[in-house]
Length: 463
Image (tube, rainbow, N blue to C red; front, side, top):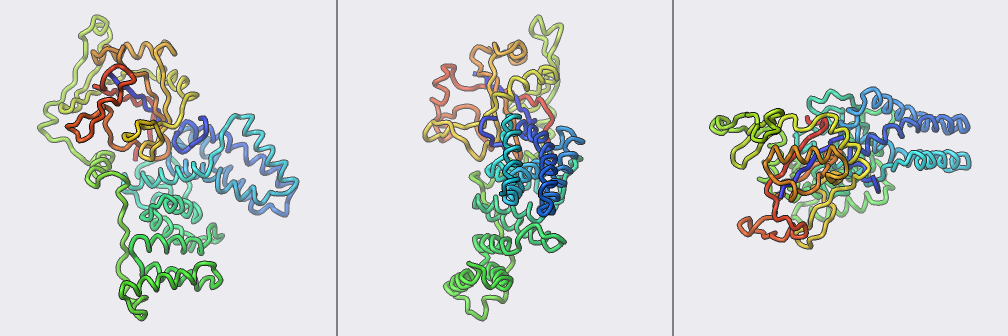
């Protein structure tokens, strides 16, 4: 059975906007309308102008940058995060300021425009998803927290705004809510550093210190957690938890045999180990090294690679397929120019209305479900949906010499912010791989998968 996927990295149903660039693109135009409505409201309520005007100007600047850059703008992960944050947590602040009679009219107008334009606005889940996507990119490409916060992701030429202390706090809080204390420490510390330099503070130092102290404690740094909580208590003696947390950390240190006089002295270096995220340590290292193109091909293996024109069918004598052998064992083949730009546009138009969050099969239950290790939206297209699909299927037949009658439908994958799929098998495994899955494709009636074709049909952001 042949299995083929088209990857659309252009970043609808119930939103989950973070999992699809296609959905994010729809927000650019919607975001552009918000400043106009906000300015109309400001004219009526001048006494509340300061915060609203600042918000409107920031949104307008981001929107103009997005329009100036075109669709490439949203492929930058920081831009995607800022777009979602601007329309979730920042937007909630605006709503809170406008809970009055005149504000109700404004909110109703925004809601009406949302319905009129058939746009699903992002949710807090989308904000968390965008933040986790940034963290995944940070780990995979070994990016520094400061560089990401400055809008710099290696060699990207797409413009991005620098993150504020509040932006960094939101990323740190998303990590905290995901029990990821490794990234919580990094981003709360960055939020603290940026807050110290801000003329107009965008975040609460009390909140940052509380999150940072607990994350540092969870990573095994009791003395450091105590010092940070001391700082919090000194900052606000009336804080509802600071005094109790100081005693709690002191009691824990005492249980570890640390004398009271030594609890704030001889502070050991910070320990901040990264969680394995469900993958074996070595498997994760290989996976991420491959993403960074750090695993070279040996000279011996390279000597066995070659290119040729495939002309073993009558039709191919007139239009041969360009083939490049990329790897011998297991066999990996590159088909050059297998799809035209026009065909890609048609497939995109067919797929976008059908995109839904991709699922995976639970090995224990056999049920399809969402999984954090697969972040994308997908759609399925059949040959009879359009002549382009039928023509492409026939071309794959000629390229692979595999029968399309037993091939699965064309699957279109649209990845979003930090979209990925952890290492996995496309085929059902036998006992030799420690886990029998012989009935994984039984309902298809076509046997096990023997080959997968991947076609990248649009630009994707790769540091």
